[in-house]
Image (cartoon, rainbow, N blue to C red; front, top):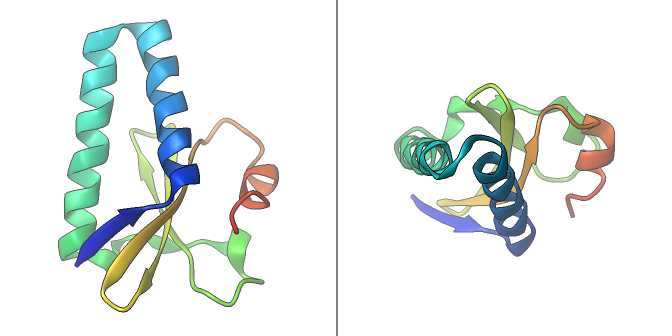
Length: 103
């Protein structure tokens, strides 16, 4: 399966990665990004590994999510053998407010 990152999700990933660098240094940021890449590769081979996300029950598409390093959430959906990464956020933020930003 192919993975496509939506621009909003890419921007959010950059923001989280920059925060990690500012708080914990470049080495930790690189490790964090490696975790994201590894999770994305796992999704390519096992796309249904993520849990169906109840925050998106009212949507016409089934959104799934997977937690990375306990502090970041990757939200995605599957359409025609393509995994669409729709959102990425820090799990310490208000989840309902974050989910409203996903189109």
